[in-house]
Image (cartoon, rainbow, N blue to C red; front, side):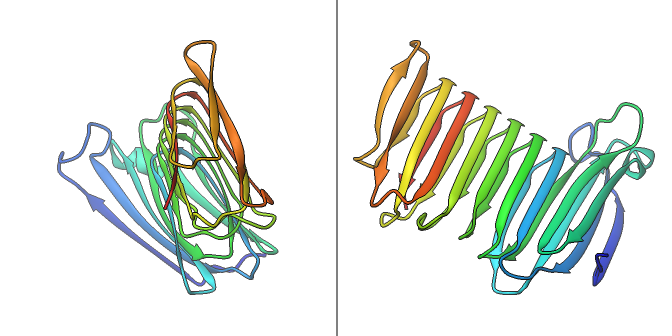
Length: 228
């Protein structure tokens, strides 16, 4: 069974300073130990997800639930559980129609791997040395990945939205890029690209030994891969 060392919830009734669907907010904080090498899985419906790293051996979850009224906030729950060396964070909704969502700000050890699924909202990941997998239906993916080498795997997919990735120049990685409708830009000489069906693009190449793997895919959206 998972143990929850800390939990803080602060309910804030906000004047209509935000968007129509953000009249009320609820701030939630939770921390949980993560043994190395650990994995953090995030499943969200609407709202941004930001993942950064720190030197502590635990995961810190700060979430902002937002909605039109207090009843809508109560229908949104954040489920956090731990299984072995994996932590699962998921947004859950009650029955009926919903306009609210959750914004996540998550800090975790740099050695951890992360898997994020977000239906509507951008995802920003930086500082990680483990595997990274991100899927969005509508939203931009931004990833600052440092050196990508060894057996490391990076898989970023956006249905509607751009992908922007930075890696270290001394990476050892094989790159595979595909956009059905979108452009590709890179400052890495070994990455070659070709147009596909006029509006799409394919690109790929090997950096260094090519031991690791990066896959970048959009249905509609531009893709950028740069050296940091």
